[in-house]
Image (cartoon, rainbow, N blue to C red; front, side):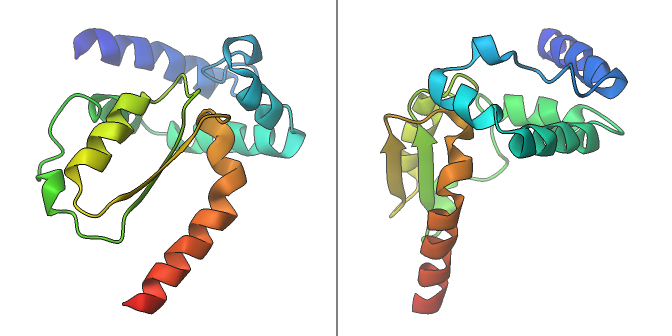
Length: 141
């Protein structure tokens, strides 16, 4: 965990010093679908604001997020009750699709959507659909 904390700490410090130029990715490192999303000035500005705010005090949340792929969450995911929707862009280079597949296999009744033409930031485009799904699920309860 020490090496992960050091790497994230280095990125976090760069972002705190200059969030506009130090987002933890370069557009050239992103798959084409994500390059299109982050090319939008409004979305890129939002990402800068989000990273700045998230790292203002500490980078421990980012470290915890990264560790969540390989460590216990402190409860069995099998205990999660539906409705659960898991959406994942198959071209995601930040979050492994295998983790979402594992969650789908272990959360009873989870609905899984894999989008073969989307990557990490593709979630921005499907957010309205996800919110509609959530509202419909809430009405059923």
